[in-house]
Image 1 (tube, helix red, strand yellow):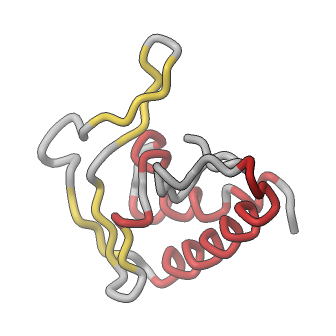
Image 2 (cartoon, one colour):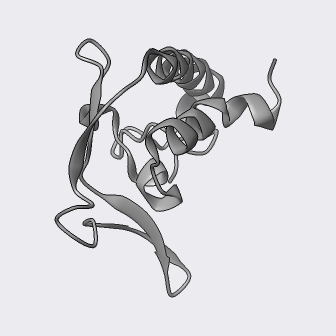
Length: 111
């Protein structure tokens, strides 16, 4: 189960089913996701600017949007959250993701 393809399953679901762009996926925070209501809000994106990863506001007002989540996406995000909790436990003191709260960080929590 622990292959990198599995790690990206939820990201692929969101990209394919609701059309999130790569930067929007990578900038998505748990605080922007409501699994109970089945919606997420695109508020920011992660972009590489001059070799640095930066969180940026969406390019246009249309890019900042609320999106209804199909049940497949809710299921995938629940699995992603469980995976992240396991990653955080495995990383222990090396976990760096607390400040970001990102849905799709690296294995040690960085963007």
